[in-house]
Image (cartoon, rainbow, N blue to C red; front, side, top):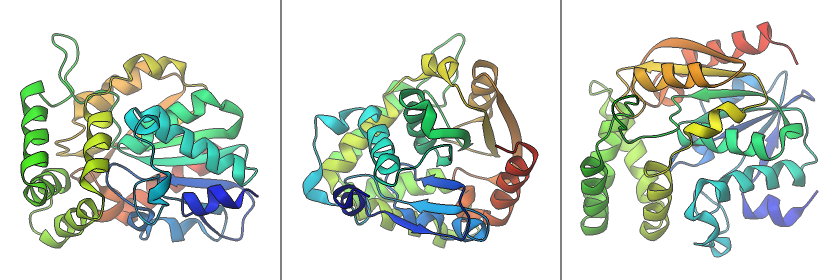
Length: 270
């Protein structure tokens, strides 16, 4: 076991089973965001939680702007964690951009994974008419970046409300806002650009392991068209539509999220 990686990525391993299941967070989030979902798998799986370098309780001194200028750097974090724990044949559950990071890791090292569960994923957030609707115009994203640089706190509040889409439970957006604010602005800015300006549509066809795509209702970040597009272009993919609203069902609707994951794993044994 490579203790340097374990400490760098704040890795925690729990559970009674032998089958590894790795939870990969989305933009600006730590492993804490899986606290309502991950415990449901501890009885039957080896549950692996970690933070990307620059997020959560990771080693901030290990942050390298060159490495983390693209999502490939974050995918390498996932590969490094698997290697440090001597993990193969793992299930990776990713949220949002964590899903694409997991996809990239599985393309890079396919032997490490046997299934992907992708919660509210998107390979491209920008619209590319006439054939692709990602949900955002370039001007929308640039305005978010401008707000991020001029008023980071305001940006965190604006984006968290847009992402969560559960106005009757404002505390959910507040928690996400706090998570964003816990990340150093310069790191969050670079991660945001790596996320919202990336285009990984061509990588979908390279997927070598089966995947479950969970599409939420009223998701402003990864709208319905995106889920349908991913399903059409990813081999061995299964698309399911959740009742959950917004972009973070593992926080807003954890019971439904657990049910979908468990059902998929039961029906597609490794």
